[in-house]
Structure formats: C-alpha cells, structure tokens
Image 1 (tube, one colour):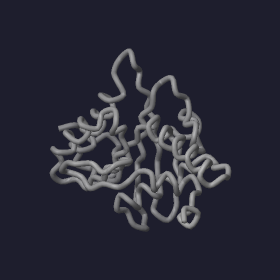
Image 2 (cartoon, helix red, strand yellow):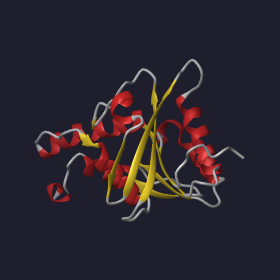
Image 3 (cartoon, one colour):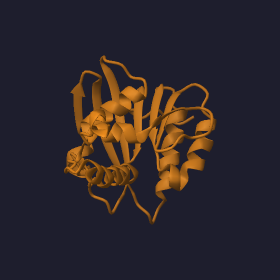
Image 4 (cartoon, helix red, strand yellow):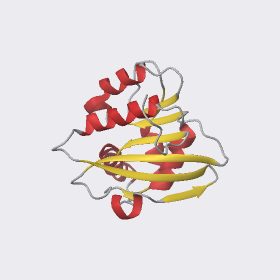
Length: 193
C-alpha cells in the first residue's frame, strides 16, 4: 500500500501537454468555423467543468489538481493562467464547488517517461485510502491502453475518464473532454447552430 501523502478525497489528474494540444486544435477549428478570435481557455473555468462532469456538486469540497508536464514546457500555451512554476504550482482558488489546490510536476525525460510518470501517479491515487474520486485526463492516443488497463483494476473509486472519443473498458465512467475545453474557451452552444 502506498502512503497517503497530503492527498485530497477529490483528485483531477491532468496530462498538461495533452490538454494544451486539444485546446489548440479546438481554437484553430472554431476560429475558422465561427469567424472570430477565440481567447485562451480559462483554466479555473475548465477545472470547474471537469469537477462537475466528474460528479462533484456545490459545496465545501477539497479538490487537488495534479498537472504532469514535460520539463522543457514552462507553461500552457492555450490556457490562462499558464506558467507552471509561478501561476499554477502551489496555487489555489475557491469557488462554489470548493477549493482547488494545484500542483505541477515536470517529467525529467532522462529519468522517466511521461507515460510512466502519469501511470505511476494514477496507481498511487487508486491505491490511496484517502482518495474517493479521481478525474483522469490522459493522452489516450499515446498511452490510452495502459490507462485503461490500470483503471480495470479499480474496484472502489469513482473514476471519470475524459477523452475526445468514447473509450471501452471497465473501472471508470467517461466524459467527452472537448465539451469542457470548449466551455473554457468561451464557445457557446448557440454559436454552433
């Protein structure tokens, strides 16, 4: 059993470079489609959407957000706030869902891969007695089968897997990632009609 080191009951585990790529792709496509400039995604708004899609309700929740990013990447290009070291890591915000505390961990490629670091972190979360709800945003195109295999072992956690396409597997429910990022980008449903 892994020690429960300062873990919250509610965790959002994020592959930072993957959400940045999805936000970029959506921005480019919707700027062409809507014929207007799309601003950077509001990070706090996006995290609210993920928490709601993950089953949290209004209240005094504690939500821990863990961003895993390449060491060479200093910031998210398509979100605001964006800088890992000064604007995200160790920062928090509070709203009607509770308090979101954010951590950003760089992956040192000479030591490990992003896939292994992400999966190892996911394993720790699933093994923790403190953690009850996990929202997972992984690069399903790059290492999705390994994520699904890890989630297959899940027996007692409420796990929501966010992906751009439906995922087959057990041990999780799922949500389409694009909807939450579109909302954070300020793309309204009535614009798409």
